[in-house]
Image (tube, rainbow, N blue to C red; front, side, top):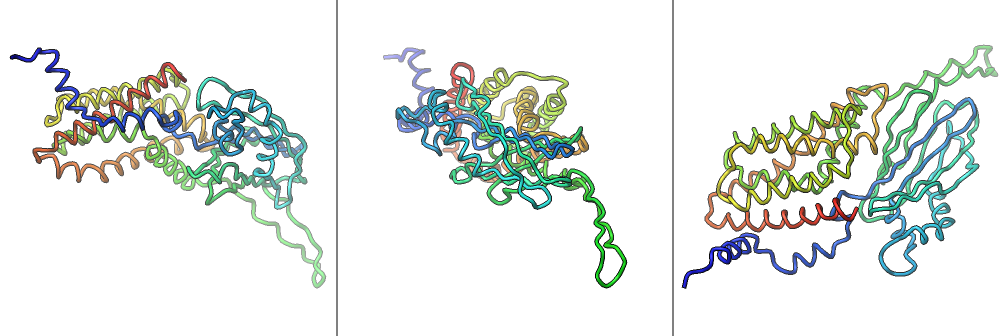
Length: 398
């Protein structure tokens, strides 16, 4: 008895995906922050006012992260809502107060004011914004920030910072290994001290300098590497490109086209020449992953023709995703804009090449095996399901 064509197609498709039920249960049971971009990052924005002896700090942290650490979920529904955040305002401010310290030229600054200024709503990445105002001993020639909030979190929490002095903006970064960042404000005054043995005065200390171009490039290169390796969706996109890449020449063309695409939009978006809302590009990034994964599943033993054109177009979309972190979280220094921009892009490429170097040799060894198509079906199908959830989450739930 012949099998109905639709039934045959359904059976073939289910066999290709071949996802065990337990995997779907795990995917649907994961918290939304895990299924989207990593949430383990806060933001510090500060304004140093040396003439007034004041330093203002706006500290922003995803409130779900704070809620888990401080156990603010009083009703046990695994959601920290606005009412619970408002009820826990004193605990939140006390906690952040204990984990944020400022000093000017080695002398502690005194916190004068603290307050909760805004609670964002709408999705799992919504942030809680707090304000702190400090007075510091004058004259202020340097300010040191020590920020350790949520470093007890197992996920490796970190904070990005931007510090403004006059018209100059300097990026900063805080993590467990390096929780303190020092920002140079102005040259130190010459110290004239009478010597007990001589009338000679103490020579002035050399004026501190801002970060060199080399230091800036190293910082942004490392940030680019971290972003691509911690961006689970970008990593899966690259792996999907590798699954059916049977010829290195073709793979080089695909990777190069993706690089060119995301480099263009990363630079244009970071410079505010062309900006697109994350609410548009994030679902599109998920769709791009679905497209490549499904293409792999349908042709597990064949490298798609003209894939380099598709990846170039998708690279334009992914470039916006890279630019959000660079522009909104890490920040760009006003005095070294071009080196920072190029270095971040280089870092993204190095991270991407690290993924290729780690995965492609092993995949290439398996490609000639008769059972490799099951690897593609299982891997591509799993990625398609996960990216499908990302799309639903980003397009309709966030």
